[in-house]
Amino acid sequence: MMFNRRTMLGAAAALGAAGLAGCRTNREEDPPNSQPSGGGSQADVTPTYQGFEGVTPDLPGDADLGIPNGYFAFPEDPPKVTDYPLAQTDPINILTQGIVANTALGDSSWYKMLQADLGNELPLNITLSSEYTQKFQTLIAGGELPELLMMTGAPELPKLLESRFTDLSEFLGGDEILKYPGLASIPTTAWSVSTLNGKLWGIPQARPPAGSIMSTRGDLLTPKGIDKDQAPADGAELLDLMKELTDRDAGVFAMGALPSSWLMNIILEMVGAPNGWLEEGGKFTQTYETEQYKEAIVHTKEFWDAGVLHPNSFTEPGSNSTWWQGGVTQVYIQGFTNWLYFTQRQPEFDLGMIKIPKWDGGGPAEKHQSDPAYGAYAAISKQDSPERVHEILSIMDYLAAPYGTDEYLRCNYGVEGEHWNMEDGVPTATDKVVDDPRRLVYFGSQVLADLTGPKSLVEAQSEYLHEVMPTSKSNPTTGLYSDTQASKGAAYVRNIGDTVGEIILGRKEMADFENLVKQWQDGIGKDIRAEYEEAFQQG
Image (cartoon, rainbow, N blue to C red; front, top):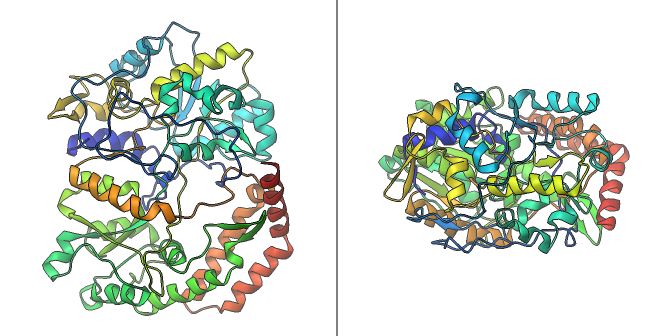
């Protein structure tokens, strides 16, 4: 599926302003506080994956590894995955984050089409992403919940889910999901985000769990005689490349962004550090406790001391995107999904990539997987009857229609001829879509689940994922819950980040970091570890 500038108006309105930062990009939007990631044993409840046979991918993926299918264009006669229009049902009250469109719901032809297709009035309560968590918590405290909403982090989350929400394990676990072909086509890895302590609590919005990439701009590098695609053999060659891309006298630097976050996360992969936690025989070790983490601090400081990072990277981290787009920085560490975003939005950049090696050489670094779905998954509040749950799931089956289907176009593009037109097999958005963006994109939509766009990009992304995903590392706490981590862990994470930053700047010593880790081990760390280990054993 190719996009032009107008197509991106729709995609950016629906996904960018409403919280694309949930895929760990450098963009400034923030998602609501999402359930802490983490994956335990969930074999008994994981839905059976069944790709939709009505559409054949140009480049097959691997659902178990989190590698999406790749598509070059939409089929001429898109098949249906559901039997819409659905029978009329009582209104389903929905709470979602998003942006308020210029077109009122009652005047929206897109919204009216969905109402007719789904046999439901679909009353929506739309809240800005920055205000969603507060709205969610107010509803929790007030007692009555909408039937369908986006689940965010909350104190004592397992108790909240058990008491106020529907356990979907019996409805969607294993082969039960095959009753819903749209939902069954959601990649296997995505379900770990909505699985907690061995139970399935919601519908994820799937995204490739490909972590971060180091992007370059061919329009900046090629005139300098530097190939936009680079594959340094080791950490020393990567640093040499960053030096080559830096001209401090001209005010040009290799990179920006907060070094203790974005750059260090890349170096953690290079030195072989765990992805958040290491699980061995049911015992958990936090990455901060490893020698690799301290090694990554040392190497990150080497980059800072070499002067290849923008001098305001610590004080103005939010300027990172502006620096890169303005040509002040040459390399941009970003979430995988933004590869497509910038290819569509800024084609003149001629994006390239730096492949990340092991620090001491010997091949590519083991990629740290990101969450395989948006953290705030769609959850159904407690219902009086199984029949009502099935009605809601039938609607979500339509919303989760995979790429290439008729429903996918209707959900994600709107009314043909008004919001989009098919041009050479490419659904191309009109300017109308700006006033009438997608409002149900977080309820199982697979608009980010597959590789789509220019053929050359799809081929490059598919090749990259087949190379890095088989050896990638997941976070072993995905799908597990620690109440101590949820209630007290954030402050410690901030302290770690601040201390690491001070070490990189030369204001503190490694001993300060080691003392902070020891405080964590003797304090909340022992509780967090015990809670994860218990949840892992129970899973």
